[in-house]
View (spheres, rainbow, N blue to C red):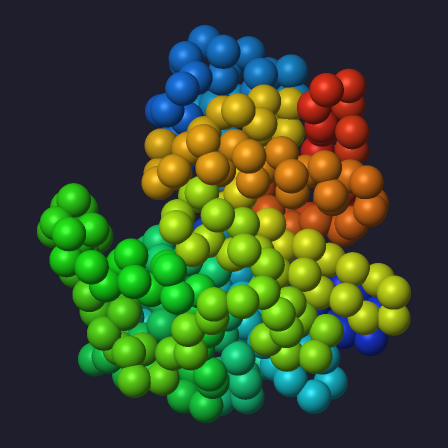
Length: 278
């Protein structure tokens, strides 16, 4: 599964979901306010095993015909001694790295920004503009934030944010980052976490990134990931995002949902359920 690609259309836009990581693993302890028994029960009801859960990391490539946009740079790449497969997926899809015009960084966690450069600090996406929400940038470049991390995670943030300091554009308002592609703040997971709305010829895709981590959160939106910086805000955001996706029948992508991470959010009583792409 890791390195696999899934190509699909949103109107005139060609989209490619890329499995940067997809090895089944345990999700025990993923949620800070859920017991292991409750998590296991909810997972079983959907046909999953919490000790062998198909969690993915799924960056998204979008070609509008005039702009090539990459949403998140993934984990540290194998070429830099890491364990991410995004570069191999792009190569398999015939996408030259220097052809990418925009890299939208939805937030500052290592599986979203770790793959920006090689081991020597050389940018993989040499011709791209980098975009990030300003509050996110401010949070991760604050030494008070880094002091709360272990040494390895702090080093990844310093290296990644330092490498893009002279080329990043900081966003403060919701709007288009390329024609037909909008940055949509979805706060709570981190202070400046953003999703992306893609629209072409009346077709839409909502990339909700880390507003969700497993399908069980559709039925239990109050479950918050232990990596959520502001849990109460994340819950509020999640409910609003699920409600919009269901009401508008939006094709939806969740970065960590089982690859290809695409499907629809369906209203189910007072909550929702995940309908994976067939």
